[in-house]
Image (cartoon, one colour):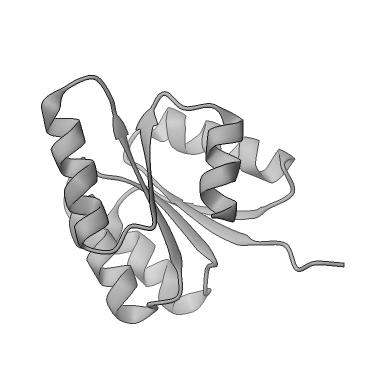
Length: 121
């Protein structure tokens, strides 16, 4: 039996954080959540994750900084950047996320199949 992937979801939108966490648990993943990048990086020190799904626009330690921190601490962790879609800024931020190490990007809103594909790589 394959090991269940441990996923950390990082977003300052509490409702989205809760719903993504629940959805991923229903899909069979072990999930932890964090409301900002600083807390996410602390959690990763305590519990290693296979995948980090992070928003880009957050208070405090934002997404680009969070991605860079994870890639520095654990280069093998799969990082997925997500951001609300529709404007030029989102596209450039998702591009910047790739430049600092994001393995995949998602534009909100996204479907469960898109999310699962990004997680599996």
